[in-house]
Image (cartoon, rainbow, N blue to C red; front, side, top):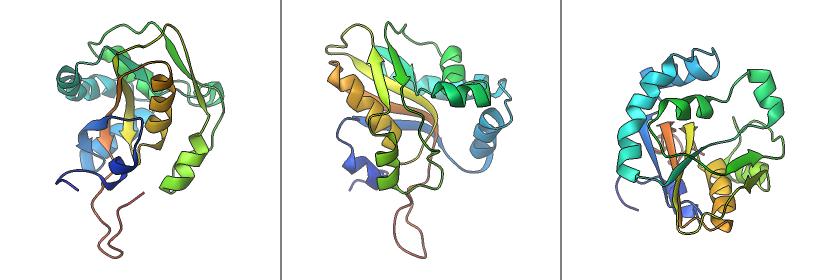
Length: 183
């Protein structure tokens, strides 16, 4: 395992990788929670500014926001990934990635449970994605289970490479009491 690589990344098959602007700690955690749970949409401008260099580096052909199920969108009132995407200078998207099954919250689930929770929960509608490099945008990437499932769907429609792109990433430093990486 290379330095700086998350142990979860080695289990990904559909995702080509993940990039995040910050670790999910301190000020970054407060910014994410401010947007996600308090609805302070003005924070999206700061978040997009931090994400833009990652977008410029990846140079994806298109960026898809990680989709919410319509029930969750109704409860929260917005999808934070869409709010972020609206603030980024990015390529237009011809197709649409949808969450077709309402899944349980991923919070508190272990990696295996997260993968099982989102299996079969997404679909893509739109033109073929043959040979394209795509990015999946979200506020946070934890184990990458959701992004991996979305990437699988996009690759099934021809995408060559799919990356997860997030404002923050969960820490992958081993827990000092157990020696295990968090999942």
